[in-house]
Amino acid sequence: MSRTVVLATRNPGKIREIAAVLGALGISVIGLDDWPDVPEPAENGATFGENARHKARYYANATGLWCLADDSGLVVDALDGAPGVFSARYASDRCEPAANREILDKANNAKLLEALADIPEEKRIARFVCHLALADGDKILLEAKGAIEGQIGFEEMGANGFGYDPLFFVPEKGCTTAQMSPETKNDISHRGKAVRQLAEQLGKMPPGTQTN
Ligand code: IMP
Image 1 (cartoon, rainbow, N blue to C red):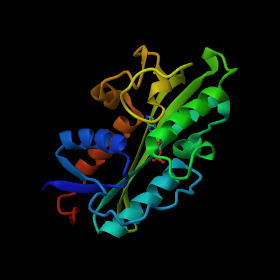
Image 2 (image 1 turned 90 degrees about the horizontal axis):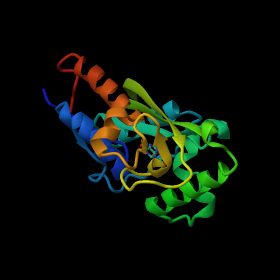
Image 3 (image 1 turned 120 degrees about the horizontal axis):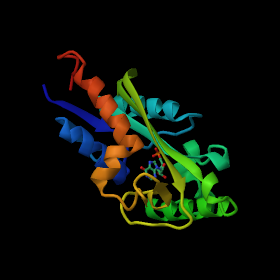
Image 4 (image 1 turned 45 degrees about the vertical axis):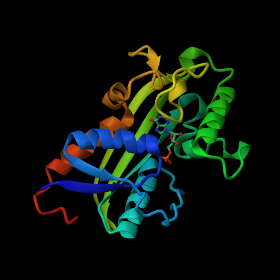
């Protein structure tokens, strides 16, 4: 039986990355475009897991479909784990409330570079973390996690991806995640790992469990 899930995000970068992995496994993904009037839920959780479970339940109830939510972010050791769950809005204090994603991303990266200005290369250790939750109404069916280790660079490099990608240097690849092809990033990224893990669990669910 073919499976369809609605993705609880309007971030086109995330939709592309998750749809590429699930699509290759025969799972169809639809975005939230068919529900333009559903307001975004608050993301007040203290952890990526709490936020992912909350978003998954919220949109599963709003759409009546199984919903896959991702909460992800950047964890920087020298900043005691910041920006962490605040990654998307790290520099919102420097932006107009109506600032779009591109402007916020630029401001986030500038703020991160400033915060790490005095930190030497060997201490700029960071990781991207992703927590996924799949919900059917209020019930959490599956969860999965992924992470990728790297270092924060001294300047932006590369134009692919989104968010902090131009600053996230992966030593084994010798480049930032913004300098990788989408396929290479998906192969090694926090989100790619979490989505493949979740898809594997989804594939093991008994036939007939899927209701939509
Ligand atoms: P969320 O929509 O609350 O999960 O926001 C996650 C934020 O973390 C994004 O807006 C980005 O700033 C950052 N982030 C998460 N994953 C990535 C990635 O793969 N590349 C770059 N930035 C990311």
